Amino acid sequence: MKVLVLGGDGFCGWPCALNLADQGHDVVIVDNLSRRKIDVELGITSLTPIATVEDRLTAWQETGGRPIRFVLLDLAREYERLLQLLRDEAPDAVVHFAEQRAAPYSMKSSACKRYTVDNNVNGTHNLLCAIVESGLDVHVVHLGTMGVYGYGSHRGATIPEGYLTVDVPQPDGSRFTEQILHPANPGSVYHMSKTLDQLLFSYYNKNDALRITDLHQGIVWGTNTELCATDPRLINRFDYDGDYGTVLNRFLMQAAINYPLTVHGTGGQTRAFIHIRDSVKCVQLALDNPPAPGEKVKIFNQMTESHQVGQLAQKVADMTDAQVSHLPNPRNEARDNDLTVDNRCFLDLGLEPTTLDDGLLTEVVDIARRYAERCDRRRIPCTSAWTRTQAEAIHP
Image (cartoon, rainbow, N blue to C red; front, side, top):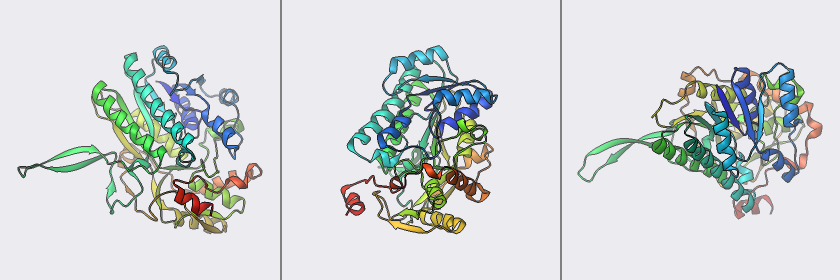
């Protein structure tokens, strides 16, 4: 199978590209290297040292990996080049990671909000348009987010995999049932861009019969897959700063350098989680089980477990003897929420979840300690505020 991995230089895209090549697929990474440019913009670097794309791909081949090609292309701005690439490569599938992925960064400023929408929505729409114009039958696997459902109270209801069956009353007293996209409730501009993706997928699936799988992913923790660990030049990103660092990795890094674990708000926020290894496995399972021609968009909840942030911090503190520090919450969200998620689709396809109790928390701490000297402690707190009210609480 020939697979284009859009955004294949990023945190989830890189280990995914290696895995697909290792599985025998012909892989082409397509990226505009924007994540590296954002590091320069923010004045921050990954805790782990990241080699250039050229050095990464050379290292992969030197370890015996099937060659991976790289194309420098901006999905959101270079439509004609994208269309020609599809025609030239005629891929069987496209894995779409090429979106600005951080909610805090998307709320950092008006410029960041506009960039997130421009990049994410235009990039997704350009891809769909180009597939239609090319006339190719391409399976699109898109990395979405659990955040499209929102983090308000669902009153104990289990969040289904994308679609909700509703009972529709009629004026004459009769009723019928219909399946709709689960109501969206985005909590940031980033999450909003993913809800707009959903509508684009639904439309192009209905109008042009595009075959699409949308993966609503939870918060990713961990750093490396087995393949990323085969050579230092293949190591994956480890973001720890307040804009791009995910909550569990941030806790583990903070514990490794004896920095109090930063719980923003009450700690009652419940989030869905998945290890990077499982994220890679889920993409492979999605590619191996594509929608049939004419089938509606497949939506999978790509997560393995849910935890309250405060309880998660305490778990890390108990393991590492770290202290916990409560800080003002920069997000405009409920003080606490429930989150019960249906993820049977991937379990039925054979996913064996990696959980927090499988020993990999210690592995992440070990990586953080190894590269602790690269940490800029000033960049640890979350300071990108959702509203002026949150900003005043953070910077009184």
